[in-house]
Length: 93
View 1 (spheres, rainbow, N blue to C red):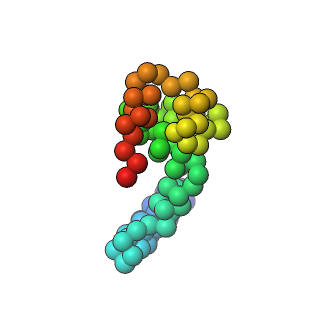
View 2 (tube, rainbow, N blue to C red):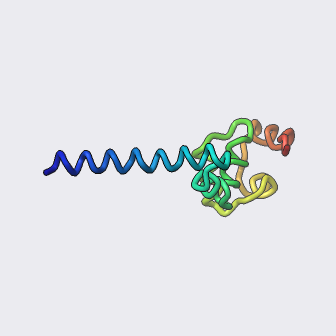
């Protein structure tokens, strides 16, 4: 019985992946991926993580401190000298 349940779970996962592949091929994007990257949290953390000298832990900490913009980081994030250089020359394309 446990083996049958395991097979059902594997088949279910494969079917879900096939649906995602079909969506990607049909539309060129995944709704789930857009949702995960289109939140305020994701945008802020990605912004911060792209600052030279900043890693994902610092980016998340700044977000959890309520920071949302580069100006917030400069004003209240206590950035290092390297991060300040990264912010100064940040490419906002």
